[in-house]
Amino acid sequence: MKTLLLLRHAKSSWKETGVPDHDRRLNRRGKRDASRVGEHLRETGLVPDLIVSSTARRARKTAEKVADACGYKGEIQLEATLYDADPDTCLDVLGRLPPGHDCVMLVGHNPCLDEFVARLTGVLEHLGTASLARVALNLADWGEVRRGSGGNLISMWRPPRNG
Image (cartoon, rainbow, N blue to C red):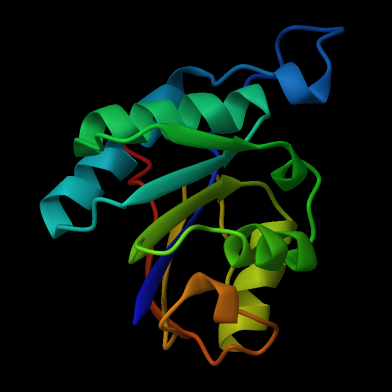
């Protein structure tokens, strides 16, 4: 059994004009919410074995803040193909993961993550910024993941919008 955590990057800033989309920063709420995701993972015992993130600045910074807050000890693996990805790209990324990781987090973007959750589980869910989907996959190895892998959406977590 494998656990896949799908995390949409936290809220980014649109204040800086002329900044390419790939290079947008997290805003204040995004920084706070990314840390809250990490705290949630630590509190629930869901610290991933591996974090794989889009190379977009807002996704990388989200992954870093989550890793710090949850106590993740590994390196964050950056995957350029997760920026502007589709569900097939996510399947390819997962299928290339080395064995030995039981809980993997992908940090990416929408609409890809919404579509990927639906493809894996048959459940339509919207992942707002800093939203986390927990999917259980009945796989022995990530290389077995494919369209319609019969995943089970265990939970959705969204940061509280107060404070």
